[in-house]
Image (cartoon, rainbow over all chains, first blue to last red):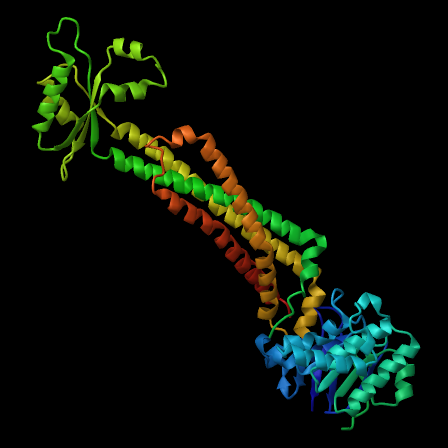
Length: 225
Length: 298
C-alpha cells in the first residue's frame, strides 16, 4: 500500500477532534476521491500523509514507512516521491510558468537542458506549451492550476495528492483538470483528490472516501490500475 | 539539491527588506571600520610611546644665577661627565639650543627673544642595556655635581597618558563589538521577516522535498549579495572619513610621537578585515537564523 491509516486520530489541544479513528489504505495506481463538506477534515487528512501533521493517536504509513518514526531529516526524501496540488495553486508569482513547473527538478539538481526539455513537454501535455514564459498573474485560474499540476507531476511521483484542485476554477476548467488527473492515473500514478464538489465525483465514478465531522463514513476500496 | 537563486528575491524586495539590510550593513561596517582604525592607531601610538620613552629620563639644568662663576656650558659638561661615569647610564644626549627653540616655537616664535630667555639645558638619558635607571639615584648622584638639577621621570605622566590611550582603545573595541552585535540582530530580524513574508513559498519548498539547509543556503546567498556592496560602501565611507581626519590632524600626526610609522600597513590590513568579516558574519547570521526558525516548523 502507498498509504495506510491505522485508527488515526487528530486533535489540536483540547479542541474537538479534527479526525477520529480513520482507517484506510491507498493502493498503488488507484484513484480516490476524498469528499466531505468544508471542515470535514479532508485537508488535515492530506496533511497527515505529507507529514505536515502528526497523528494524535494511531499510525500513518507512507510508502511502507511509519510517518511517526520518520526523522525530520528523512521527510524531504519521502516528499520527493509525492506530488501535491493545492486549491490556491501556490505558484511563485515572480517566476514564469516554465520556472514554476521546473522547480522540483531544479531542487533535485537536474541538468538544465533536461529541465528545459522535460518541462516544455509537460507544459505541452497540460495545454500550456505556448504560455511557458507567462507569469502566474497573466494566466487564468484554470491555467495556473495546470501549471501547478505540471509542477506536481514533473518528478513522476507515485502518489499525487490534490486538495480541492478545482475549487478556484470554473466548471469547464474543472473538467479539463479532472481529465488530466485521470490521464496521470492511467500512466500509473495513484491519485487522492479531495473535493467538496459531489457533481465531479458522480461524473467520474471513481472510489470515494467520504468524511463527515472528522469520521470516515463511507469507504470504497480502490483497485489497482 | 539546488534551490533556484531568484526564489526569495521578492521576500527581500517586499517591505524594502533588502534596502534596510543594505543600509544597516553599510552603517555598521562604517562604524566598525572607524572604530577598528581608531583602535589600531591608538594601540600603535601607545606602544610606540611606551617603547620610545622606556628607560629614559630627562635632566633639566637651570641656567646659572648671576652670582655663579661657572658658565652653563661648563655645568652641562660636568653633568654629562657625571652621568657617563654611572654604569646604569647607556646614552647621554644633550639637547641643542636649536632643539629647545624648536620645542618652544609654537609659543615663542621670536629667535631674538628666545636667545635672551634664561632657558634650562636639557639632557636626555637612556639606561644601559640590562640596567634600570632610577630617577632618585640620578638625582642623588647629580646633587653632588650641580645644584638645582631636576630629573624628570617620564614614567608618571606617560603612565597616565597610556592609561587614557588604552581606555580609548578599549572603547573602540567595545564599539566594534556592539556594531557587530547590532548587525547580527538586525540581519536576524530581517531574515525572520523575509521568512514570514514568504512562509508559503518555504512550506511549498519543504513539500517539494527541499531540506532546511537548501532554504537556509538561499538566504545566505542573498545575505552575501546584499552585504557585499553594503560593506564596500561602508568601508569606502570610513576610509574617506579617516583620510579627512588624518588631514585635519596632520599637524599632530606628523609629530614623531604620534606617527604610526610602519604600522600603516597593519592598520590598513586590520581595517580591510572589517568588511570581509562583516560579509562573512552576515552570511552566517542569515543561515543560522533561518535554520533555527525552520527547525521549529513541523
